[in-house]
Amino acid sequence: MSPSNPQRVLSGMRPTGQLHLGHLHGALKNWVKLQHEYKCFFFIADWHALTTEYDNTSNIATSVWDMVIDWLAVGINPGEASIFIQSRVPEHAELHLLLSMSTPLGWLERMPTYKDQQQKLKEKDLATYGFLGYPLLQSADILVYKATMVPVGEDQVAHVEMTREVARRFNHLYGQEADFEQKAKDAMRKMGKKNAKLYKELRKRYQEKGDGEALNTARVLVEEQQNIVLGDKKRLLGYLEGSSRTILPEPEALLTPISKLPGLDGQKMSKSYHNTIALREPPKEVEQKIRTMPTDPARIRRTDPGDPEKCPVWQYHQVYSTSETKDWVQAGCKAADIGCIDCKKPIIEAVLDELKPIQEKIARYQEDPEAVQAILNDGCEEAKDVAKETLEEVRQSMGLVYK
Ligand code: TRP
Ligand code: SF4
Image (cartoon, helix red, strand yellow):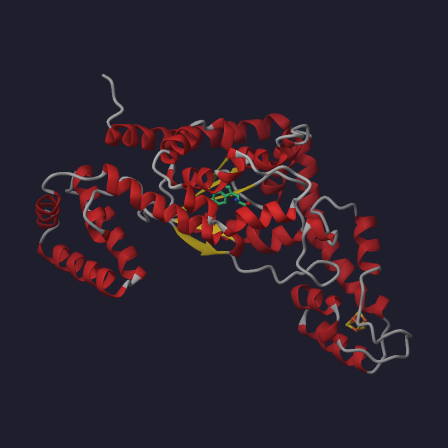
Protein backbone atom coordinates (compact mmCIF):
# COMPACT_ATOMS: atom_id res chain seq x y z
CA MET A 1 0.00 0.00 0.00
CA SER A 2 1.36 3.39 -0.87
CA PRO A 3 0.69 5.87 1.93
CA SER A 4 0.68 8.90 -0.37
CA ASN A 5 -2.06 7.49 -2.57
CA PRO A 6 -5.39 8.80 -1.35
CA GLN A 7 -7.35 6.13 -3.21
CA ARG A 8 -9.24 3.86 -0.88
CA VAL A 9 -10.67 0.54 -1.92
CA LEU A 10 -13.68 -1.04 -0.28
CA SER A 11 -15.60 -4.16 -1.09
CA GLY A 12 -17.82 -6.64 0.66
CA MET A 13 -19.39 -10.04 0.29
CA ARG A 14 -22.58 -11.43 1.67
CA PRO A 15 -22.03 -14.49 3.85
CA THR A 16 -24.41 -16.80 2.07
CA GLY A 17 -22.91 -20.21 1.42
CA GLN A 18 -19.50 -21.53 0.56
CA LEU A 19 -16.86 -19.74 -1.46
CA HIS A 20 -15.84 -21.53 -4.64
CA LEU A 21 -13.31 -21.38 -7.48
CA GLY A 22 -15.44 -18.79 -9.29
CA HIS A 23 -14.97 -16.43 -6.35
CA LEU A 24 -11.26 -17.21 -6.25
CA HIS A 25 -10.64 -16.54 -9.94
CA GLY A 26 -12.98 -13.54 -9.92
CA ALA A 27 -13.18 -11.26 -6.89
CA LEU A 28 -10.64 -12.75 -4.49
CA LYS A 29 -7.54 -12.79 -6.73
CA ASN A 30 -8.39 -9.24 -7.67
CA TRP A 31 -8.59 -8.24 -4.00
CA VAL A 32 -5.25 -9.86 -3.25
CA LYS A 33 -3.70 -7.77 -5.99
CA LEU A 34 -5.43 -4.55 -4.92
CA GLN A 35 -4.31 -4.86 -1.32
CA HIS A 36 -0.67 -4.39 -2.43
CA GLU A 37 -1.54 -1.19 -4.27
CA TYR A 38 -4.08 0.62 -2.12
CA LYS A 39 -5.48 0.95 1.35
CA CYS A 40 -8.19 -1.71 1.26
CA PHE A 41 -11.22 -2.44 3.41
CA PHE A 42 -12.79 -5.85 2.91
CA PHE A 43 -15.82 -6.71 4.96
CA ILE A 44 -18.44 -9.34 5.42
CA ALA A 45 -21.86 -7.89 4.78
CA ASP A 46 -23.85 -9.79 7.39
CA TRP A 47 -26.65 -7.22 7.51
CA HIS A 48 -26.95 -7.52 3.75
CA ALA A 49 -27.40 -11.26 4.18
CA LEU A 50 -30.33 -10.53 6.48
CA THR A 51 -32.20 -8.69 3.75
CA THR A 52 -32.94 -12.03 2.11
CA GLU A 53 -32.32 -14.46 5.00
CA TYR A 54 -34.20 -12.69 7.77
CA ASP A 55 -36.42 -15.72 8.28
CA ASN A 56 -33.53 -18.09 8.80
CA THR A 57 -30.58 -16.55 10.55
CA SER A 58 -29.17 -19.77 11.96
CA ASN A 59 -26.43 -20.16 9.33
CA ILE A 60 -25.18 -16.62 9.17
CA ALA A 61 -22.64 -16.82 11.99
CA THR A 62 -21.06 -19.98 10.57
CA SER A 63 -20.95 -18.50 7.09
CA VAL A 64 -19.28 -15.36 8.41
CA TRP A 65 -16.65 -17.37 10.22
CA ASP A 66 -15.96 -19.65 7.25
CA MET A 67 -15.73 -16.69 4.94
CA VAL A 68 -13.11 -14.90 7.03
CA ILE A 69 -11.02 -18.06 7.15
CA ASP A 70 -11.35 -18.63 3.41
CA TRP A 71 -10.30 -15.05 2.69
CA LEU A 72 -7.22 -15.45 4.86
CA ALA A 73 -6.42 -18.79 3.27
CA VAL A 74 -6.44 -17.38 -0.27
CA GLY A 75 -4.07 -14.60 0.71
CA ILE A 76 -6.06 -11.61 1.88
CA ASN A 77 -3.46 -10.23 4.22
CA PRO A 78 -4.59 -8.56 7.44
CA GLY A 79 -1.24 -6.75 7.50
CA GLU A 80 -2.23 -4.94 4.34
CA ALA A 81 -6.02 -4.85 4.26
CA SER A 82 -8.54 -4.28 7.03
CA ILE A 83 -10.83 -7.28 7.33
CA PHE A 84 -13.99 -6.84 9.35
CA ILE A 85 -17.66 -7.59 9.84
CA GLN A 86 -20.28 -5.01 8.94
CA SER A 87 -22.41 -5.33 12.07
CA ARG A 88 -19.39 -4.81 14.31
CA VAL A 89 -19.19 -1.24 12.98
CA PRO A 90 -22.64 0.21 13.77
CA GLU A 91 -21.65 3.47 12.06
CA HIS A 92 -22.78 1.80 8.83
CA ALA A 93 -26.31 1.75 10.23
CA GLU A 94 -26.21 5.31 11.46
CA LEU A 95 -25.06 6.63 8.11
CA HIS A 96 -27.66 4.50 6.36
CA LEU A 97 -30.36 6.10 8.48
CA LEU A 98 -29.11 9.62 7.92
CA LEU A 99 -28.84 9.07 4.17
CA SER A 100 -32.30 7.53 4.07
CA MET A 101 -33.83 10.87 4.98
CA SER A 102 -32.83 12.47 1.71
CA THR A 103 -32.87 9.50 -0.64
CA PRO A 104 -35.87 9.50 -2.98
CA LEU A 105 -37.86 6.27 -2.97
CA GLY A 106 -37.69 6.25 -6.75
CA TRP A 107 -33.92 5.76 -6.75
CA LEU A 108 -34.38 2.53 -4.82
CA GLU A 109 -37.46 1.30 -6.64
CA ARG A 110 -35.71 1.79 -9.97
CA MET A 111 -32.70 -0.38 -9.07
CA PRO A 112 -32.65 -3.31 -11.51
CA THR A 113 -31.59 -5.67 -8.71
CA TYR A 114 -34.75 -4.83 -6.75
CA LYS A 115 -37.25 -6.35 -9.18
CA ASP A 116 -34.81 -8.99 -10.49
CA GLN A 117 -34.12 -10.49 -7.10
CA GLN A 118 -37.79 -10.45 -6.11
CA GLN A 119 -38.49 -12.38 -9.31
CA LYS A 120 -35.65 -14.81 -8.77
CA LEU A 121 -36.42 -15.47 -5.13
CA LYS A 122 -40.15 -15.80 -5.55
CA GLU A 123 -40.50 -18.11 -2.58
CA LYS A 124 -39.38 -15.30 -0.25
CA ASP A 125 -41.33 -12.24 0.74
CA LEU A 126 -38.97 -9.47 -0.28
CA ALA A 127 -41.53 -6.69 -0.21
CA THR A 128 -39.76 -5.39 2.87
CA TYR A 129 -38.37 -2.07 3.93
CA GLY A 130 -34.95 -3.62 4.48
CA PHE A 131 -34.77 -5.20 1.06
CA LEU A 132 -35.77 -2.00 -0.69
CA GLY A 133 -33.06 -0.23 1.26
CA TYR A 134 -30.36 -2.76 0.36
CA PRO A 135 -28.54 -0.49 -2.12
CA LEU A 136 -28.63 2.44 0.29
CA LEU A 137 -27.09 0.33 3.02
CA GLN A 138 -24.42 -0.48 0.46
CA SER A 139 -23.96 3.25 -0.16
CA ALA A 140 -23.44 3.76 3.55
CA ASP A 141 -20.87 0.92 3.56
CA ILE A 142 -18.92 2.71 0.88
CA LEU A 143 -19.29 6.31 2.00
CA VAL A 144 -18.55 5.68 5.65
CA TYR A 145 -14.95 4.88 4.56
CA LYS A 146 -14.89 7.57 1.87
CA ALA A 147 -13.88 4.81 -0.51
CA THR A 148 -12.91 6.01 -3.96
CA MET A 149 -12.78 2.63 -5.68
CA VAL A 150 -15.26 -0.18 -5.25
CA PRO A 151 -14.38 -3.45 -6.96
CA VAL A 152 -17.66 -5.15 -7.87
CA GLY A 153 -19.16 -7.44 -10.45
CA GLU A 154 -21.31 -6.18 -13.29
CA ASP A 155 -24.55 -6.69 -11.33
CA GLN A 156 -23.44 -4.27 -8.61
CA VAL A 157 -22.37 -1.34 -10.78
CA ALA A 158 -25.80 0.28 -10.56
CA HIS A 159 -25.46 0.34 -6.77
CA VAL A 160 -22.18 2.20 -6.98
CA GLU A 161 -23.69 4.62 -9.47
CA MET A 162 -26.53 5.31 -7.06
CA THR A 163 -23.98 5.83 -4.30
CA ARG A 164 -22.45 8.61 -6.38
CA GLU A 165 -25.81 10.31 -6.55
CA VAL A 166 -26.39 9.86 -2.86
CA ALA A 167 -23.01 11.45 -2.12
CA ARG A 168 -23.62 14.30 -4.55
CA ARG A 169 -26.96 15.05 -2.98
CA PHE A 170 -25.50 14.91 0.50
CA ASN A 171 -22.69 17.31 -0.38
CA HIS A 172 -25.13 19.60 -2.06
CA LEU A 173 -27.46 19.63 0.94
CA TYR A 174 -24.89 19.86 3.70
CA GLY A 175 -21.69 21.11 2.11
CA GLN A 176 -22.89 24.59 1.19
CA GLU A 177 -21.29 27.69 2.56
CA ALA A 178 -21.99 31.32 1.82
CA ASP A 179 -18.90 32.38 -0.10
CA PHE A 180 -17.76 28.98 -1.26
CA GLU A 181 -16.33 30.04 -4.59
CA GLN A 182 -14.21 32.78 -3.07
CA LYS A 183 -12.94 30.46 -0.38
CA ALA A 184 -12.08 27.82 -2.94
CA LYS A 185 -10.12 30.34 -4.95
CA ASP A 186 -8.25 31.53 -1.86
CA ALA A 187 -7.39 27.92 -1.09
CA MET A 188 -6.15 27.49 -4.64
CA ARG A 189 -3.73 30.34 -4.21
CA LYS A 190 -2.31 28.71 -1.10
CA MET A 191 -1.11 25.80 -3.26
CA GLY A 192 1.43 27.98 -4.96
CA LYS A 193 1.43 29.20 -8.53
CA LYS A 194 2.49 26.04 -10.28
CA ASN A 195 0.11 23.73 -8.47
CA ALA A 196 -2.75 26.19 -8.74
CA LYS A 197 -2.29 26.30 -12.49
CA LEU A 198 -2.19 22.52 -12.75
CA TYR A 199 -5.26 22.28 -10.53
CA LYS A 200 -7.16 24.70 -12.75
CA GLU A 201 -6.24 22.80 -15.90
CA LEU A 202 -7.26 19.46 -14.46
CA ARG A 203 -10.53 20.90 -13.15
CA LYS A 204 -11.29 22.30 -16.56
CA ARG A 205 -10.53 19.00 -18.26
CA TYR A 206 -12.87 17.23 -15.90
CA GLN A 207 -15.67 19.76 -16.01
CA GLU A 208 -15.61 20.32 -19.75
CA LYS A 209 -14.78 16.86 -21.01
CA GLY A 210 -15.75 14.61 -18.10
CA ASP A 211 -12.14 13.35 -18.00
CA GLY A 212 -12.15 11.05 -14.97
CA GLU A 213 -8.39 10.63 -15.00
CA ALA A 214 -7.95 14.37 -14.70
CA LEU A 215 -10.27 14.29 -11.70
CA ASN A 216 -8.22 11.58 -10.04
CA THR A 217 -4.96 13.36 -10.71
CA ALA A 218 -6.41 16.55 -9.29
CA ARG A 219 -7.58 14.74 -6.19
CA VAL A 220 -4.11 13.33 -5.65
CA LEU A 221 -2.65 16.80 -6.13
CA VAL A 222 -4.96 18.24 -3.48
CA GLU A 223 -4.29 15.44 -1.00
CA GLU A 224 -0.55 15.91 -1.44
CA GLN A 225 -0.62 19.56 -0.40
CA GLN A 226 1.07 19.93 2.95
CA ASN A 227 0.44 23.58 3.67
CA ILE A 228 -3.31 23.50 3.34
CA VAL A 229 -5.72 22.95 6.18
CA LEU A 230 -8.33 20.23 6.00
CA GLY A 231 -11.24 22.61 5.45
CA ASP A 232 -9.52 24.07 2.41
CA LYS A 233 -8.74 20.63 1.05
CA LYS A 234 -12.44 19.79 1.19
CA ARG A 235 -13.24 23.01 -0.64
CA LEU A 236 -10.68 22.23 -3.31
CA LEU A 237 -12.00 18.69 -3.69
CA GLY A 238 -15.54 20.00 -3.86
CA TYR A 239 -14.69 22.77 -6.28
CA LEU A 240 -13.39 20.15 -8.72
CA GLU A 241 -16.88 18.80 -9.10
CA GLY A 242 -19.30 21.51 -8.15
CA SER A 243 -20.10 24.27 -5.76
CA SER A 244 -20.00 22.72 -2.33
CA ARG A 245 -17.48 21.13 -0.03
CA THR A 246 -16.96 17.43 -0.51
CA ILE A 247 -17.93 15.75 2.70
CA LEU A 248 -18.57 12.38 1.10
CA PRO A 249 -16.47 11.77 -2.05
CA GLU A 250 -18.10 10.05 -4.99
CA PRO A 251 -16.79 6.50 -5.42
CA GLU A 252 -16.10 4.75 -8.68
CA ALA A 253 -16.95 1.18 -9.55
CA LEU A 254 -13.92 -0.90 -10.45
CA LEU A 255 -15.35 -3.63 -12.59
CA THR A 256 -13.97 -7.00 -11.52
CA PRO A 257 -12.63 -8.91 -14.52
CA ILE A 258 -14.97 -11.84 -15.04
CA SER A 259 -13.60 -15.14 -13.91
CA LYS A 260 -12.29 -17.15 -16.84
CA LEU A 261 -13.25 -20.25 -14.95
CA PRO A 262 -16.82 -21.29 -15.75
CA GLY A 263 -18.86 -23.75 -13.75
CA LEU A 264 -18.59 -27.49 -14.34
CA ASP A 265 -21.32 -27.26 -16.97
CA GLY A 266 -19.82 -24.31 -18.84
CA GLN A 267 -22.29 -21.73 -17.44
CA LYS A 268 -21.14 -19.11 -14.95
CA MET A 269 -19.99 -20.82 -11.74
CA SER A 270 -22.71 -20.18 -9.18
CA LYS A 271 -24.23 -21.88 -6.18
CA SER A 272 -27.69 -21.61 -7.70
CA TYR A 273 -26.60 -23.59 -10.79
CA HIS A 274 -25.08 -26.41 -8.70
CA ASN A 275 -21.95 -26.32 -10.83
CA THR A 276 -19.33 -25.24 -8.32
CA ILE A 277 -16.11 -26.55 -6.87
CA ALA A 278 -15.89 -25.17 -3.35
CA LEU A 279 -12.61 -23.98 -1.89
CA ARG A 280 -13.26 -26.57 0.82
CA GLU A 281 -14.24 -29.34 -1.60
CA PRO A 282 -12.67 -32.64 -0.45
CA PRO A 283 -10.16 -33.98 -3.05
CA LYS A 284 -12.31 -37.05 -3.73
CA GLU A 285 -15.26 -34.83 -4.62
CA VAL A 286 -13.08 -32.63 -6.81
CA GLU A 287 -12.00 -35.68 -8.75
CA GLN A 288 -15.52 -37.02 -9.02
CA LYS A 289 -16.93 -33.67 -10.14
CA ILE A 290 -14.36 -33.18 -12.87
CA ARG A 291 -14.60 -36.76 -14.08
CA THR A 292 -18.31 -36.33 -14.61
CA MET A 293 -18.08 -32.92 -16.25
CA PRO A 294 -19.94 -32.75 -19.54
CA THR A 295 -17.74 -32.63 -22.67
CA ASP A 296 -18.30 -31.97 -26.35
CA PRO A 297 -21.59 -33.81 -26.96
CA ALA A 298 -20.25 -34.98 -30.35
CA ARG A 299 -17.86 -37.34 -28.56
CA ILE A 300 -20.27 -40.11 -27.80
CA ARG A 301 -17.73 -42.85 -28.32
CA ARG A 302 -14.03 -42.74 -27.65
CA THR A 303 -13.43 -42.89 -31.41
CA ASP A 304 -15.58 -39.84 -32.21
CA PRO A 305 -13.49 -36.72 -32.83
CA GLY A 306 -14.39 -33.62 -30.82
CA ASP A 307 -13.92 -29.88 -30.75
CA PRO A 308 -12.44 -28.28 -27.61
CA GLU A 309 -14.29 -25.05 -28.37
CA LYS A 310 -17.52 -26.87 -27.56
CA CYS A 311 -16.25 -28.29 -24.29
CA PRO A 312 -16.12 -26.71 -20.83
CA VAL A 313 -13.05 -28.83 -20.00
CA TRP A 314 -11.13 -26.82 -22.59
CA GLN A 315 -11.91 -23.62 -20.72
CA TYR A 316 -10.35 -25.17 -17.64
CA HIS A 317 -7.25 -26.01 -19.71
CA GLN A 318 -7.05 -22.39 -20.70
CA VAL A 319 -6.88 -21.38 -17.06
CA TYR A 320 -4.67 -24.18 -15.78
CA SER A 321 -2.55 -25.74 -18.54
CA THR A 322 0.77 -25.03 -20.20
CA SER A 323 0.83 -24.44 -23.94
CA GLU A 324 2.23 -27.93 -24.42
CA THR A 325 -0.69 -29.53 -22.68
CA LYS A 326 -3.08 -27.30 -24.60
CA ASP A 327 -1.54 -28.40 -27.90
CA TRP A 328 -1.89 -32.00 -26.80
CA VAL A 329 -5.59 -31.43 -26.03
CA GLN A 330 -6.31 -29.69 -29.32
CA ALA A 331 -4.65 -32.33 -31.46
CA GLY A 332 -5.77 -35.31 -29.39
CA CYS A 333 -9.39 -34.23 -29.17
CA LYS A 334 -9.80 -33.40 -32.84
CA ALA A 335 -8.18 -36.65 -33.95
CA ALA A 336 -9.86 -38.75 -31.26
CA ASP A 337 -6.38 -39.76 -30.08
CA ILE A 338 -7.16 -39.10 -26.46
CA GLY A 339 -10.20 -39.92 -24.36
CA CYS A 340 -12.01 -37.34 -22.30
CA ILE A 341 -10.89 -38.99 -19.10
CA ASP A 342 -7.24 -38.62 -20.21
CA CYS A 343 -7.94 -35.04 -21.09
CA LYS A 344 -9.38 -34.31 -17.66
CA LYS A 345 -6.48 -35.80 -15.72
CA PRO A 346 -4.23 -32.74 -15.86
CA ILE A 347 -7.18 -30.58 -14.80
CA ILE A 348 -7.88 -32.74 -11.78
CA GLU A 349 -4.21 -32.47 -10.86
CA ALA A 350 -4.14 -28.72 -11.36
CA VAL A 351 -7.26 -28.03 -9.31
CA LEU A 352 -6.05 -30.30 -6.52
CA ASP A 353 -2.68 -28.52 -6.56
CA GLU A 354 -4.41 -25.17 -6.38
CA LEU A 355 -6.69 -26.18 -3.53
CA LYS A 356 -4.15 -28.06 -1.44
CA PRO A 357 -2.30 -25.10 0.09
CA ILE A 358 -5.59 -23.25 0.52
CA GLN A 359 -7.16 -26.15 2.37
CA GLU A 360 -4.08 -26.57 4.51
CA LYS A 361 -4.30 -22.96 5.54
CA ILE A 362 -8.01 -23.29 6.21
CA ALA A 363 -7.28 -26.21 8.51
CA ARG A 364 -4.61 -24.25 10.32
CA TYR A 365 -6.90 -21.29 10.95
CA GLN A 366 -9.68 -23.61 12.08
CA GLU A 367 -7.34 -24.98 14.70
CA ASP A 368 -6.51 -21.50 15.91
CA PRO A 369 -9.77 -19.60 16.32
CA GLU A 370 -8.12 -17.11 18.68
CA ALA A 371 -5.82 -15.96 15.90
CA VAL A 372 -8.78 -15.43 13.59
CA GLN A 373 -10.65 -13.60 16.33
CA ALA A 374 -7.64 -11.32 16.87
CA ILE A 375 -7.41 -10.53 13.16
CA LEU A 376 -11.09 -9.64 13.10
CA ASN A 377 -10.79 -7.52 16.23
CA ASP A 378 -7.94 -5.55 14.71
CA GLY A 379 -9.77 -5.15 11.41
CA CYS A 380 -12.93 -3.97 13.15
CA GLU A 381 -10.93 -1.45 15.17
CA GLU A 382 -9.22 -0.07 12.08
CA ALA A 383 -12.55 0.23 10.31
CA LYS A 384 -14.22 1.80 13.30
CA ASP A 385 -11.59 4.50 13.60
CA VAL A 386 -12.26 5.66 10.06
CA ALA A 387 -16.03 5.26 10.29
CA LYS A 388 -16.24 7.23 13.54
CA GLU A 389 -14.37 10.11 12.05
CA THR A 390 -16.66 10.25 9.04
CA LEU A 391 -19.75 10.24 11.21
CA GLU A 392 -18.48 13.06 13.34
CA GLU A 393 -18.04 15.08 10.21
CA VAL A 394 -21.41 14.04 8.86
CA ARG A 395 -23.24 14.93 12.07
CA GLN A 396 -21.43 18.23 12.22
CA SER A 397 -22.27 19.19 8.67
CA MET A 398 -25.91 18.27 9.29
CA GLY A 399 -26.03 20.33 12.43
CA LEU A 400 -26.48 17.40 14.78
CA VAL A 401 -23.94 18.41 17.38
CA TYR A 402 -25.30 19.29 20.80
CA LYS A 403 -22.30 20.38 22.79
N1 TRP B 1 -24.09 -6.12 -2.53
C1 TRP B 1 -22.82 -6.78 -2.66
C2 TRP B 1 -23.04 -8.14 -3.31
O1 TRP B 1 -24.10 -8.70 -3.21
C3 TRP B 1 -22.14 -6.94 -1.33
C4 TRP B 1 -21.85 -5.61 -0.72
C5 TRP B 1 -22.47 -5.04 0.35
C6 TRP B 1 -20.89 -4.68 -1.18
N2 TRP B 1 -21.95 -3.83 0.61
C7 TRP B 1 -20.99 -3.56 -0.31
C8 TRP B 1 -20.00 -4.68 -2.24
C9 TRP B 1 -20.20 -2.43 -0.50
C10 TRP B 1 -19.20 -3.53 -2.42
C11 TRP B 1 -19.32 -2.43 -1.55
O2 TRP B 1 -22.11 -8.65 -3.91
FE1 SF4 C 1 -13.39 -31.93 -24.09
FE2 SF4 C 1 -10.95 -32.90 -23.82
FE3 SF4 C 1 -12.99 -34.53 -24.35
FE4 SF4 C 1 -12.09 -32.87 -26.19
S1 SF4 C 1 -10.97 -34.57 -25.29
S2 SF4 C 1 -14.23 -33.23 -25.66
S3 SF4 C 1 -11.51 -31.10 -24.95
S4 SF4 C 1 -12.70 -33.34 -22.51
